[in-house]
Image 1 (tube, rainbow, N blue to C red):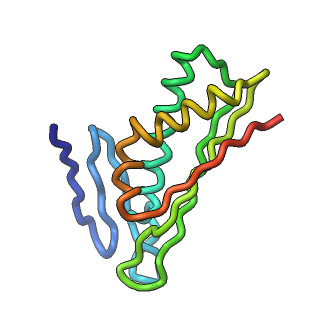
Image 2 (image 1 turned 30 degrees about the horizontal axis):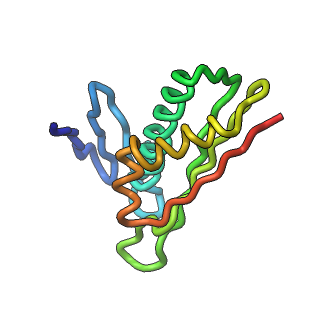
Length: 138
């Protein structure tokens, strides 16, 4: 199976990406010639990771009949100091809220996502140290 996206230069440092019929604006910071019209490419890597693992966790917990009031995936990456700058470590925080949430099921869903289902995690693990934690809000 193949995936194809199109990234078209608009002007200056601005680009427009076409992904699955959706348009995403990309741009650089003003101090490097951009106009700040959209996000930078590297943080979108973290968005991809959060979306991939988040969708896995929601799907798995749904099959386990775990009901949530709130779910958030916070992803933080540490960039290398030297060029080419890349995320050498990435930490994923899974934040849950609900009544009587079973920690064993939350842990199982996160582990299955990280070790079996999330292809973005698998790709990034080859270049970065991935870590995660589970937080349950009151």
